[in-house]
Length: 360
Image (cartoon, rainbow, N blue to C red; front, side, top):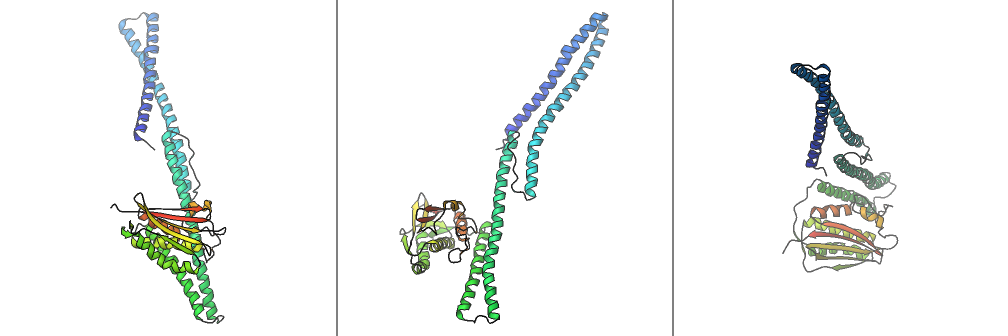
């Protein structure tokens, strides 16, 4: 952290040092060299007082001029040394900034120079790391968005060309497949809209929402899917649990987490959703059993809530999703002042989020 007071003190000390050097040089020249020269002249010539004073003034004047020149040289040397250190320290920061402006996000400033420059370099390096990470995420976002759009569009194009060429008949099943691909594009578009709205800060203000009722509504909506997949869904809820959040956002968060559990729970497995109050916050947990193919690797945990990041690298349509659901969960929960997290447990995965509960 840069402290202006410390900088001012250091500048003052540097100025005092330069002044002290100048005064010391001048005093040495006047009182030592000048007096010695005057005494020598007095002994040699035995001149009168007026002549002696004239000679002394002349010798002191010359000595004083040389002393001033020496002091000026010393001051310039010291100032040049200090300026060189400062310029070298900040010059490295400027050079790194130019490299980053040119697209080299790996540029860093070495930890050298004066203390204040080191503090600026440290802050600059943190900024550079953040920019590098943002650039990585931007590239992945573009690549993944292109992939998510390419797959349904390619399928739609193939179906339409086959229908045009009468390769396949216009059956209800064909139109159902076309509708499924179009619906996938619509869902992707809505998900991207949610992310953009959150980035722009266009989120509605929170209100008192009954979390218990919201969870039950989400369970009623997704319970048939769990039953068709042969997954037992357990629900553990209090009678009433009020949180400060937008109701639509709570429904979106719950729906995404239940979809995630449904997608990654093996057939015959179990899932559970529960809620409770913990230190002034409502905590919701969604857990599901896993097997070797669907286990949640520890290395993936820090990136689970990134946009388009998926543990399932194969992009299998049955369980791959678009990779936006957990990113939306994180964005909506944090917009309401809550937190999200995930854990990979032996034989199961746990996702949770917390929302502030109003004081009674």
